[in-house]
Length: 116
Image (cartoon, rainbow, N blue to C red):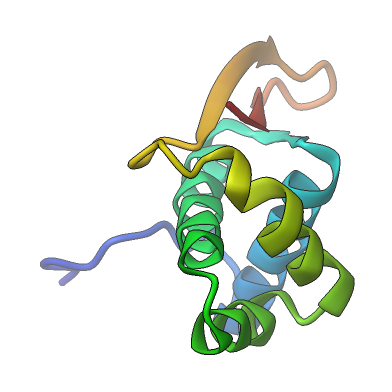
């Protein structure tokens, strides 16, 4: 049973799912947004908001936590220097999910995750 367990599995192993989260998070932080399916966009929103909250703390410990997830020093530097200061006065809700309809090939619902 899945009592009190949050998050979707996306029918993939844990390592593969975490890698997908890392890649999409990196894309949203560097390019300002990413196109993906609606379910993935809703899950990525949680991860990106958590990374921006770490960026707002601006401590060595927060940088190391972000680096352990993102694993790219340039992206972490961008997060702490450019992205997080933009949201200094905002208490949450740094991302939005814009629904774009259905994909042509498999009719999957497509959305864009973008920074507010």
